[in-house]
Length: 456
Image 1 (tube, helix red, strand yellow):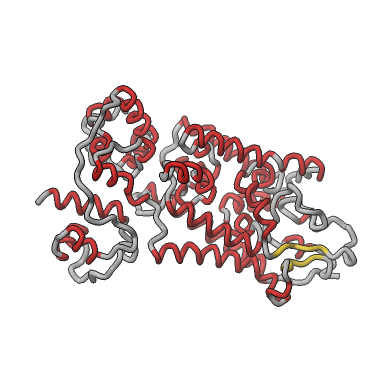
Image 2 (cartoon, rainbow, N blue to C red):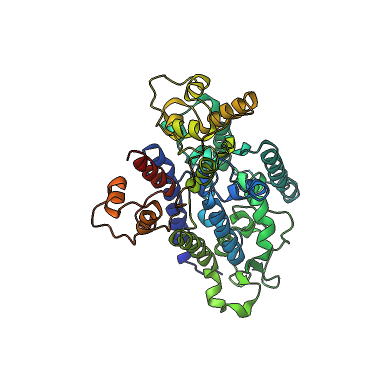
């Protein structure tokens, strides 16, 4: 008997995977082209978990992390409650690349390496070991240790295309090994090493939906397991196995339509004909959470410079971990008390380099990373523990994405037309317009306004 047709499922999933893959590549490549886009670090859900301890204990985001990481993590959590690890199967760009390479391997008739169920269960525990090691090292080092080798960042930040560096070879090697393995073993990274997958394999047990097997109709042919990219057996209990991706490949492959189906844990919550739509609903919820955060000003991929402006207002020097890529060398010197001459000498920077150059541009042009600036400042603090900075007084307004032009003008006590001139906006721009609606970065606007006021 032919499987129940699901014509919408493969098309919807392929288009969804392609769309999110393009979006992440757009962000990664756009950053190198100078476009105002978030870094791939700022839209990584695992980053929220990595930096959670530091945020709770110290009230600060670790370098490369921002409120947007919490938003994406929340969006993933919301999608998990609907359809398990649908994020991994429908959204995650690294998972998409592995799926495509697996299909390519089959087209090239490369050997498909099958892992025995007993071995699969043991190897699945490696994800939890990976998770524990990453969190432990991050807490100890107070920086994102994993980012140096993270395959997601290595691939989608596009540094390998625009500014490859020898120091990044471990990340490139790991990413290459993962992509190569995908030709022979379906989603090897997701099944055996992914730290986010470890978390989702536990949380997804709370999911509303799950692929369930009808033992009375099942013949035990094993076709479903062969079709599953995660090598799962729908008849087995979840255990430590990787999470179901809600891709429904097993349902489509099953020769007996009544044997497998995606169904609700509480069938009365949703009519049976609508239950196969839950993975797509999970994707829409994921996108909806991010859209809601963007419109309400919660979404922020720059940290909004809160630590920087707080340091200037209080006269307390900026902590090294709060140095961000948007800051210029002059900003770093002003907020830390480290002389510009020392920054240039310790960083081996060209003497003719403008001090108004953002750190992120130095990373692209000279290979001088934001982390290098943090290390220089930390070393300087150890040698000069009494370093102080001149307080600049409190900023009249702490700018956020939802802050309007009228609020900025009132807070800083400047005419609206002068504010529009400082920001390079048309004279017809309404004062009720928020920074988010104008596509403006709050921290950048704050610096532009304060710099403009300093010229008066």
